[in-house]
Image (tube, rainbow, N blue to C red; front, side, top):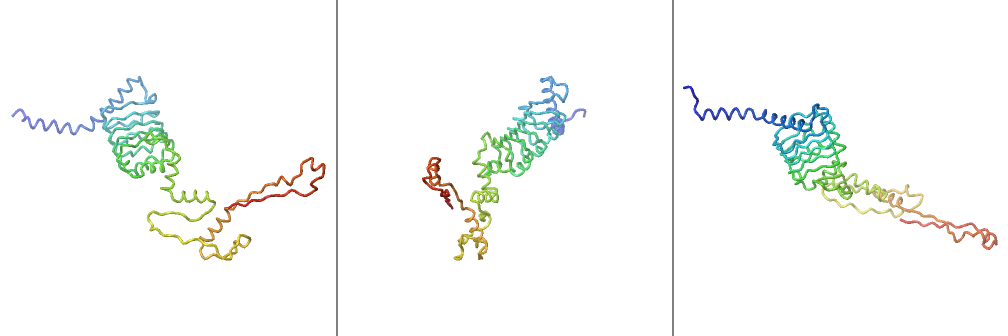
Length: 288
């Protein structure tokens, strides 16, 4: 028989097509890059500062490390799953990856100059892995992550602000000072305690551990033989925290001293010698 049945021919064509898919995807990507180079009139890779590759139905992208001076890259509205093609683009400052199917961003940590990063409308689920990848970007100021599964995290926004303190614009909203204070209180109890203790000029232990059961602390008392004088440090306390409490009370005292100008004679009074030679009086007010 000189010809093959139709169903065998179709099976052969389908198997051939499946094998060639990865190569075809890269070929499409390469063709898209070359088309952009022609449109912009670039003949050397060193002249490429920006690439517009959005809405190209790309599932893969060729390695772009050849463009050493690339600063702006548009890849939004494609079908990308990762960003492993960005490894040596150290000058990249703006990266638009929104509206893809990206489920991990491994490799972005090698972009130290990144200033704007749009990742909204993707499939990012692991908030810890995402934050870990973005932590090294000290120049990152604008970040968008909304419409990702990780946004379902209860304290998602404060969590991102806490781990990426350099970000000023998150999901198109300015990061406020109130949010920065809130994230310290929630995620860094030790630092929040130090800030509060400094505000009240004391070091009373007020730390909180959400996993430990609630335990009411005993009231702090001053020994009956205690007096605010030179014998403060000589007093023996049964509970060390009582000593801290007393020390904080002592340090919180504030004294304001001013001159009683009514007792200071004027130049005319000095000349007439009506008030005599009595020394001026100092007035001291102590606040606690």
